[in-house]
Image (cartoon, rainbow, N blue to C red):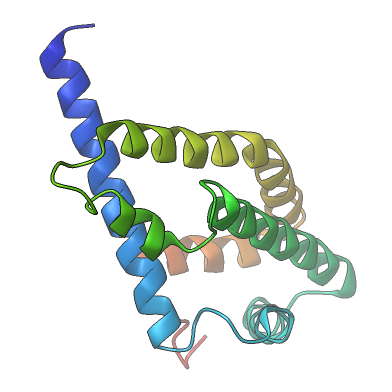
Length: 155
């Protein structure tokens, strides 16, 4: 592989890692991280369930999807050693030179965690979405068209 391609790919991976680390740290400051994730997940399932008017079977499928996503999140946090994304990222800048080998290793570990957990998440997402009726699927598409912004109070 050409040097410039490798360098570009490493740059994109580093940028993704920076964005992920910042998002992870920002989430903890605003109360999104930590705390009781089971309680937060239950509230989100209830909220989405009411907005989509889910039946019990659909709500169970959404619960499975939420649990798979949480497991993937925990696998991502655990990949790379300490489990603290901020300290992992800061360690790359600890010396006189950027730790390229450490960055590559961290990206590979995070990528492996995503790769290993993705089939279960894809299957759970498909199971949930495929069991929605046409109106519910349209509400999901509308939500995504708004860029993932919160459900409007109009429905």
